[in-house]
Image 1 (cartoon, rainbow, N blue to C red):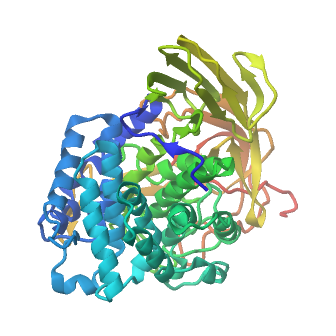
Image 2 (cartoon, rainbow, N blue to C red):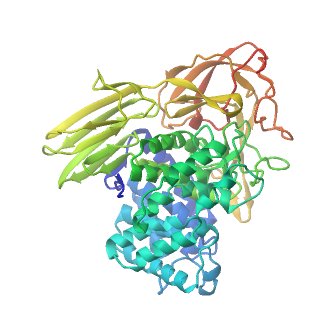
Image 3 (cartoon, one colour):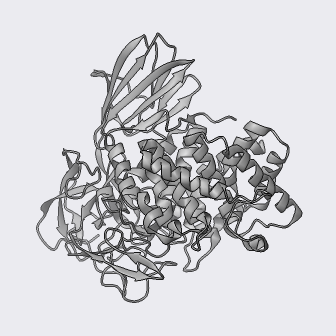
Length: 615
């Protein structure tokens, strides 16, 4: 079946409001400067240098390119074009494009070939550079011939991420219609990993590293069927929902991600989730929703995007964690054995490249790709898919139409649409309404609750539509008798006060220097809390220039807590126990403010309700 919805380009869709401020923070932070400060991008073999020549430059460009064009920033666009120019100029006569010598191709992991192919498609969508289709045609045909002859082998990361080539193959099929294109698609699917044969491994976490349980592989895998179905000529079997259900049941977190540090790690709130997994999970959910139209994927996307993504990056976006923890009371390196199953002792530290540098390069795709999911193209018009402040200007049946959404969602539940047409139009505007919405109003008039609103009969001129609804603040049950507090798509946490110490040093030729240094967040205590009642009162606050600010959060939840004997994880002084030792109150209830999970660096998110009998 064809995709239900398709994406607009950055020439048509622009971020506004708090979303534009968030993207500007990213451009002014680490992602916007990697090509000037970080050797693995600045001096990469992709650009003729002597540093990493595999996934890091493509990862960085996957976020930097849409960021540049969404912001319409001339300097960022110039640098994006320059990066692509330097890659294309090194493409070899037979089409090979990755920076490795001819005699080393056989040992080169083809994941980088697949990754750069989708990056070049992204650049083509943003820039329209006419060189891209032919460059892709040459490189993908060379891949087909080399796999067919046995000169190259699909293994390791490439075998687990075979489907990432399908953006390029789909573009090439649309433009060239050559028989080798579907033949390569079938070859990749046949030689790539069949995840149905691996799902039994996802149930019980192990303290060993494996491609089969690697969290990033699995988050990417979710979109494999919707990416490949058309070229393979196969109907959807529902594999995304099937796989998601297993992963969620045995490894799900309160913020809609899966634990993986780096491999699947069960249901404990003190196990980590890799940042690469967060942004790849978002990408999968965006693609699955656009292809299937199933709104459950849009709600899952919101939960990850508005909570897990901002929480694992500092407010100024100059530092990030490799892994985040739902209950996280300290972010300083462990002095001894790492808590994490397959990550080092600094993986939860905020910094330039804690643990590994893949997340340093890759985290930048999160916000730009979400921004491009705000409005989607439908057969009969436009869908407001994710309620993000945005403006859309495009041609409908050859005539200009603009749609602007003014909103502070998810911090507020009020969306003002402004539709402007130069003449009467049959365009339809669809608006997705979350399942948790109640008291729906349209232009101030109560309306029957629906998952989708449709507006049409737009006449020449301007039409404004105000959609609003309420949401409840509810405790949501988690494993082991713990609860998290949810209000719409936002999760709320008890922030843990911390001291923050910048740490500057040089390691392996990579300089950490303010603001791109490491940061030790040392918790100051008070985290051993339990809910002391079931009253959760929301207070809307001013939304600052930093949307996910801890000192100025856009919304607070007032409730009461008391302290309990929670205890520490066995062998650690800076990690809380996965489950409290006891739930009996140690003091009188006191009022506190919970803030959005995405606003916190240190936090307690999964808490019990206090109990006099300790159960």
